[in-house]
Image (cartoon, rainbow, N blue to C red; front, side, top):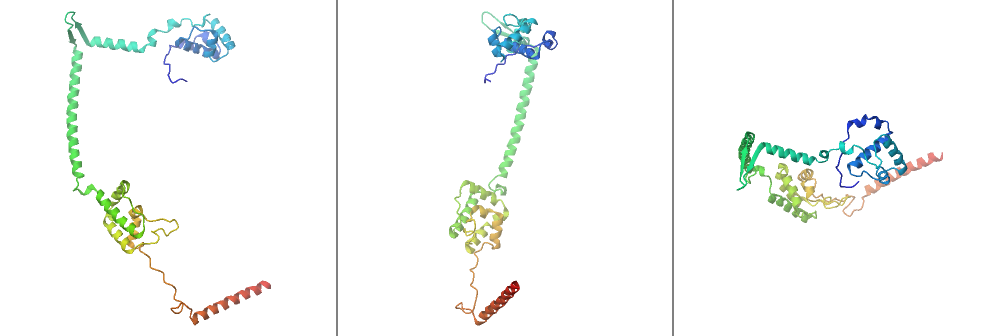
Length: 314
């Protein structure tokens, strides 16, 4: 199917549904008769038998059979044209633009009468009462539009003044600034550099995240205490990558509510060094009592093994 469509059309009367000459034909011949009307509307008729068979997508032999039936019914001439086609298809049916052009010119002539003098080519325009009423209505609409625009401008100015007052730097609703976010990032980078955590490059995305987090009063009031505790009580091996995922703490972790709570609770303080078990003296050798206890435990286990072995032999 081509991209450029052919919008030509033709008039098909309702008597086609009731005409005995058509209804007595087989359905395939009725369809081919409509296809012939489409070809006539495109200006393809009259045409030879080979061309018509190709347009109808049938064999020449099938077209000869159909043409014979159509000619016997008086629906096709000997030169393969449709009778009474021109009388049933009017030129106005193919030109809607001409009808609209005539209608506009007629309406324009009714509204205003123009007389042109032959010497100076001046125009004396006589405007009818209808034209005057139309002009008055247009002027009223324009005045109404101007008044409504003035009221809208005044209301917008009031709204803009209110918004500017709300978003002033001195207002508390202005929210945290970029400088406040940079302070948080600088404090975290100091902790990360000291303990081997991931530092933040302070890009725009990180600044926006810190700004959003600073809107939380809990974080805004305790982030400095949290960074100070990490500096003094750290580093924690888990935060430095000593875990099964090799994960290292970063700024996104610090911004979470759970991390802030655990830092302030002391969960991420540096763990105390494990002390060796005190077995005996300072040299690490076991005492006589410990050796005797171990020997007694071994003898007890050996008796149980012998007992089970004896029952198994039985």
